Amino acid sequence: MLKGFAITPPVVGRISIGRVVEKNGKRLPEKDDQFTITTQVQNRDGWILHPAHEAQIKASQTNKLRSIQVMLPFNDPDLNLRAEYVQFNREDGRPLSTSDGVTCRRRTGQGVQTVTCADTEDCCLRFADTKPYGRLYVKIGGKDDLGTFIFRTTSYNSIRTLAARMRYYAAVSGGLLAAMPLELKLRGKSTAQSFRTPIYYVDLVVRAGMTVEEAIQEARRIDAQRQEAGYDQAALDEAARLGFGNGSFEETEEDLPAVAEEFFPEQSGEELAPPAGHPQTGSHSLADKLKAKEEKAAA
Image (cartoon, rainbow, N blue to C red):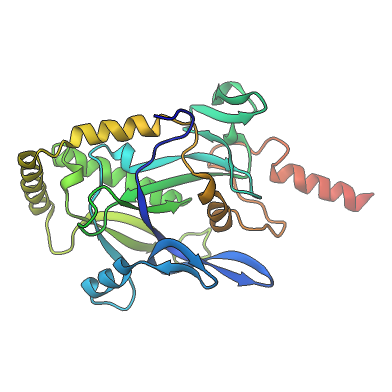
């Protein structure tokens, strides 16, 4: 295996709850109230819809896709959902540093360095342009059992909810998470920060029409069928674990521009808030920028 870059699950499509639109000559992300399943190919109008999008629309019998029938590729929740704090270069989308809240990996002139967040001012948690960044891998349909669709998000609500759901389902099913019949569900909520307008996040629930008990029974049936056929789920999880650990950063070079465009649009003077509970320090903090602006105005 080539060393130095992560071997991630094969991706055959994307899932998003927004799109990129052009406004005043700038391409900016725009939130939506429905899922969109696309291929990995773009044209002038944006990402091309995947055939699975129309199939899911028909299955849900609605005009807007607000739930997607999925299965997870791995039994280990941490393999299905990859989440961390990331500081991106806003120009090219390249991750500058990542942190799990305890240790931080940084790109430096001497290569990738690992530092302890509590002991250094260079941890990405201390910069205002750091975001929580999650990648969820799911399977849609049954034609390609090892091919996945990726949902990328910087939403605390989505990351926290997905992480909790997977751990709970793994616990109650006896570790048969990859055999559970599930669906992604779009939920809305209003907060003081959203000025009471709805914001949308992604949840993971048992498939519509099923109870948790029925979903567990189906998971046991699927797992037994796979074992009888020689399908080694434990070996698949281990292969994925080794692949993720093969590199410091998981995004591929060709995906970086799309990541930057979707999550780090051109700024209009308004900076992003840092992770809750972490101070704004360093040369990229909003406080420093406001202070510099005041000093310039007074000069």
